[in-house]
Image (cartoon, rainbow, N blue to C red; front, side, top):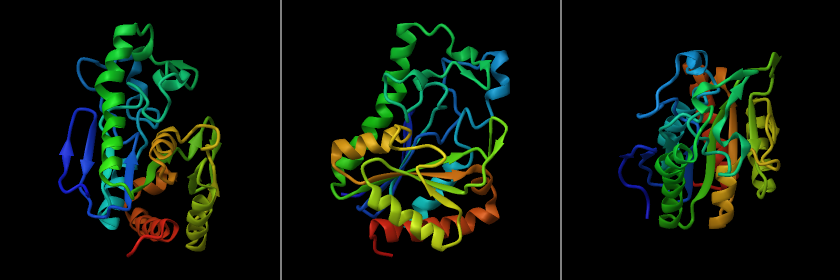
Length: 247
């Protein structure tokens, strides 16, 4: 069974796709802060930054989904409300500071507020991925993320990172295919799946016994429409090669 129609919910957006062999996910697709929450005035500095969402990741995922004819599930809430790429007991599930500055939204969160964020956004997002994987028993997972080109004052020359824990051979095939197309690519950079920075694809992959990777694309590439066109072609080709999908 494939996902035959698009779908919207409070916690997620689903894109239809005919290929039963691949499921795309995008945990940090949106900077949307749903009601009843509202940004405090002191948080205005962070609302349109890479802390609130993975800039360019939504467009990248939507275009990859169309190119590969693969279904996709994208979050519809900012990672600062609750981070779906962290385990529920992680300290950074509800980030309370960034760049040495306080995030007022997440100060003094009481148990009721925490549970509402889990119940209304975090769990429904992950439950929808579980449902898609149950309905598509052959689907492997590719999670799409982006990373800032300048982090805490340090410029990053890396263009694409391939993150994994359980699937090293798959990750190596993917990275080799991207390197062959001229992209500066590295395994488990700028974050490591082995160290838990690919929680969502790894968790779903382990529980459903599916291969899983997380792709990290530098944000200036993902945001540039002209360069993104080449990027989409090359990532799609690398995906087919690594996951052994038919064109």
